Length: 145
Image 1 (cartoon, helix red, strand yellow):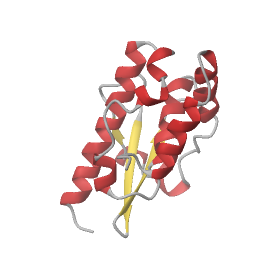
Image 2 (cartoon, one colour):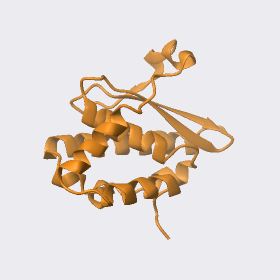
Image 3 (tube, helix red, strand yellow):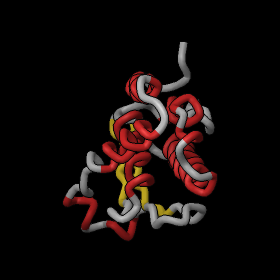
C-alpha cells in the first residue's frame, strides 16, 4: 500500500513513463494547469501562508471541509517549474485528509525522477512547499472541524 494519496501516486507513475527532458516538459505542462485563485480567496489573499524557504514567492491556503483538505496556490507565472510542482500537489492531494498529507514522504519527488532534471535549489524549494503543506495539515488536525 502506497503512502501517497491515489491521485498523487498516479501522477508519480505518469512521470515514470517519460524520461530525461520529457520529465521537465511534463512538469511544465502541469504549470499551465494550475488554476487561478478562486474569487473568494483573491479577496482574502493576505490570509494565505507564504513559504519563506522557497526563493519563488509561493503562497498556500488550506481549506478543510468535512474532514478533508484542499490546497490553493498562488505562484507567479514566471516560475513554471514551481507552478508545475504546485499544480501536481494541488491535484494529487485534492480532497484528502490531513493525515494523508502528513504521510507523504518528503522526498517523493525522487520517485518521479525530478531530481534528475531540476537543480538542487529547485528541489529544496519543492521540499519546502510540501513541508509547509504538512504544517498546515497539522494545524487543521489541531483546530476545529
